[in-house]
Figure 1 (tube, rainbow, N blue to C red):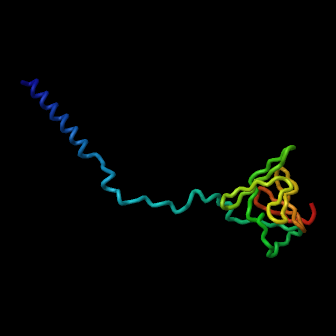
Figure 2: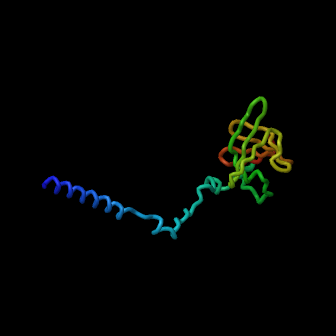
Figure 3: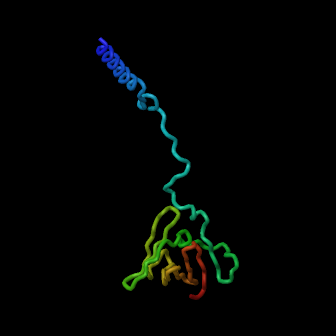
Length: 145
């Protein structure tokens, strides 16, 4: 009889364990179906925060630049330089993440042409001056190069 009592107790214990796990299981579908997760306040796909500082314009005399006609070049940042015997290119990027690849002697915009480059800077020629852009987001304006 003790064998049947032990067997009966084990069966009761097993059935209680099975039913108790089913009763305590979470049901996510019924409780939170109407709630949605809030979106983050900042967009991770906007881009680098270094673009918010703007472009620094350095003139020949060191005097602050007066209000000038903005050239499209001022809205871009130098991202990369590839210089080789077969062809040389630079890559420019703006705050929206648009990348422009410019070959040597190609115009970025009307009257602004890439004329020279080193490992640290790119030189553009306009009608009256040269614009030298470096990787620190600075553009020097010079009358001679």
